Length: 156
Image (cartoon, rainbow, N blue to C red; front, side, top):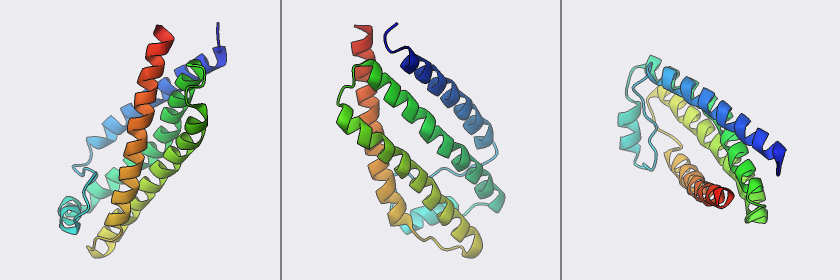
């Protein structure tokens, strides 16, 4: 079997993503907070954050698992690309680590925003969060597109 180890990595990544998504699902039942993706306005952030503290603390638990999720989906992206004979390999080698770093930063900044709001009911770092999120989600779209193309090429 061609590239057997990458198949194992792919299976591992998919299984761990499934485990993490299951954790997201269970924890999300304990909070009504939804992250303010693609929102930059302070009042929008304020309105989303202006819920009871337990909801916000429960959402922070999702962010912990989201940090793990970054490594698992990156394993999947990388494995699929390797199975497609390193399509755009030089670009993928640099953008996947960047994607992980941005995801971790996005979670960290959102935790800072939540902690600051719990402490003094003020919104800080909303523009930073927006900038990091926009770049990270652009990379997610790029990597997902490359993965779909690679799956097509592998099956073909």
